[in-house]
Structure formats: C-alpha cells, structure tokens
Length: 480
Image 1: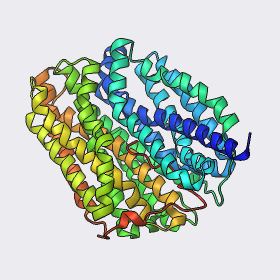
Image 2: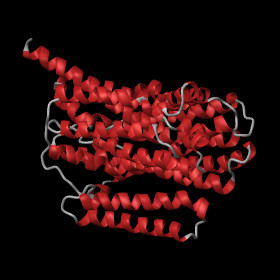
Image 3: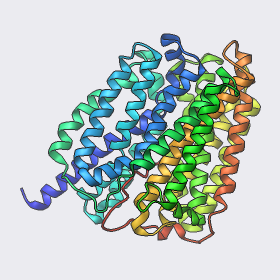
Image 4: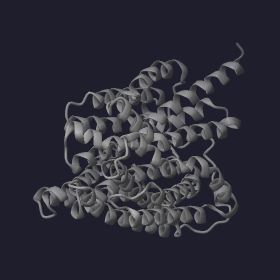
C-alpha cells in the first residue's frame, strides 16, 4: 500500500469517526424534547425536573467545552477524545437504566461532561488527518452530519419513544460509542497542541455561577422568588459570574479573555448567539410538549411536525451561504433572527387548545428559514472577528454561549409558563405557553438588534480563513 493511499484511508476513517461522534453529541441536545411527556409519565417529576433533563446536559456541555479542548491539547487529543467518548457512552447507558428522574438528571449531566471533552476535539483530529486541499469538503460533510443530528433530534426521539421506549434515545448511543473506541485508538493519530491553557479557576467560577442562576430560575416557580434557596442561587451565581469576568480581565491565561469583547463584531455575534438559543431552546422545549399533551399527537407525529422548523437549515443553509458571500454576514444573520422572532410571534398568536397544524405551519417554516439564515454565516462571523491565533478560543466561546443560552432559555421560559399556566388542562397549558412564546420572540428580536452591532464589512465572510497550523480548538457546529 502506498503512503498516499494510506493517508487517504486515514482521512476517511477520521471523517467517519469524528462525524459519528459529533452526531451523537449534537443529537442529544434535542432528542429528549419529544420524549419528555413519556419520561414524565414513566418516572414522574414536575416541570422543573423536566427542565433539568435537558439543561443538565447543555449546562455541563457549555461549561466544560473549552476546558475539554485545553485538556486535549495538553494531554493528547486522541487520548482525551477516547476518554470523552467512553464517559459519554457510559453515561448514556446510565440514563437508559435510570430508575428515577433524579438519576436520569445526574446521568445527563455526566453525558454533557463527556460531550464537552469529545466534541471540541473532533475538528482538531479531523484537520490533522485530512490534507489541506480537501479540508473544505471534509468540514462540509462533518457540518452536514451535525446539522442532520439537530434537525432529526425531535423526530428520532419521538419515533424511538413511540415504537420502542424513551430509554432507547439513550441506548442508541451505546453501540455507536463502543464501536468508536477501538476505531479511534487504531485509526486516529495522536497530536498535541502548543500553549494549552488549563484554567481551573475560570472553569469553577463559570460552572458554579451558571448552575446557581439556572437553579434559581428553575426552582422559583416551585419555591417562590423570595425562597432562601432561590435567592442564594441567583445572588451567588451572579457573584461567581462577576468573578469569572474579573478573572478573565486580570488573569494572564484565562479560559475566556475578556479583551475579546472590546471587539464590537465579536460582542455582537456572541450576544446574538446567546439570545437566539435562549429563545429557540425554550420554545422547542414547550412546543414539543404542547403538540403531544394538548393537541394529542404521538411522539413520532410531533417530531415530524417540528421538521419544518428544525430541518429547514438543511435546505436553506447553502442559499444563506451564497447570500452572505455576496452581501456580508451581518444582514443575513440579522434577517434570520428577525424571521425567527416573527415565526415565534406567529405561534404565540395561533396556539389554542385545539389549533390545527395548518395554522401553525407558517410560523414553523418562517422560524426554520430564520434559523438557517443565522447558522450559515454565524460561524464565519465569529472567526473573522478575531486574529488567526485566537480563532480556537473564539469558536469555543461562541459555542459555549450557545449552550448557555439554551439552558437559560428553558429555565426562563418554563418559569414564565409555570407562572401563567400549567399541566392541569389543555387551556391551562396554552395560557402558560402563549406568554412564554411572546418572550421567546422578543428575546430573538433583541438578538437581531445585537447582530446589527456587527460592523458592516462587505465580503467579511470571505475573509474568514482558519489558522493554517492550528485549527479551531473547539467545534463550529451548525446548531448544537
């Protein structure tokens, strides 16, 4: 076998391994949404417990994402990729076997840690294995697989829940993870980064702060806003996040250098990303339950009916990419966010206890088109806002803020839902859903305004090129 053939084979194996790993991690963001009514019926639990089955994953994923990339750079990317995959796979099995809601939430949190170690190293390992001339195609395939995972998450979750059981949304990961472990050991080359940063203090401050705030928001509908535990969570969480900002300003090698936010383009796209995911995740969390619990759709039917929203990026993203090349990324991202806000506002207007799918469909399609217009140029806007040697940090920060936005969105919108409605009847659910969707639409509209803060630079997206020596340390997904 020639050296060129062996190299080509190694690149193919790397693409397969990293794409499957990315698919698993991205899928678990939304796969659980259509299974929530079945999980609630089987394991019990109140609204706050359902929130944590989603947020426990997104929160730990967000907090440890950049730390996981730094661990791989320092101790070996292949080694840490294997460790992260093993943790993710074992936690998936634990979630499938969970005897109660608390153990399920704990397993989801560990899943997020495994994904945070595994996911950011997929692009780095892929880049090391693929020749520079063919990386664009490899990145496109990798991104398409991740996009497929996000789009199909509600449908896969609904189908498995309806035709087998909700446990299989987690069992699905186990054979895939077990297959990846020996393949990664045999087919991926080991590599190390230079100047890897292990910011333990920053990680502890960020994780403690975010947990405190999300805990306070989740528990407030149950315990009340004046409850000592709620107040302690909110105030302590805010204080720790303030400490994280101070640490990022004054520490020599922080996980997230705050000086990056002096750049208006970096601040604008990251604020837009956080707010967009806040509105989107919170809305999907409630609408997937609305379609089953109020309208009576089966889990599979609910997943299929969500596809015009979650699956639209697969169709529209190429068009959005062409548009962003011609007119720049800022107007495309802003237009996408305003469209998504309009779609959510439509849904807030038409949801009733017996609403037809036909009347909901325009809102789902408009939201889906808006999501697609955002995803295509957003990553390039992030990367073009910083210098080449800081692209790994910038990409990691953006993806971490997306996950944080998702966790906060579920907590905030579920609090609004609980304050105005509940699960007692279809009408009670709608009474809580409508103001939550209005809030989601308003938040995403503010995200559109934040995108307008990005300086207008015609062709800015075309200038965004990855660093030649070190690829982005952390993932650039199309929607995880």
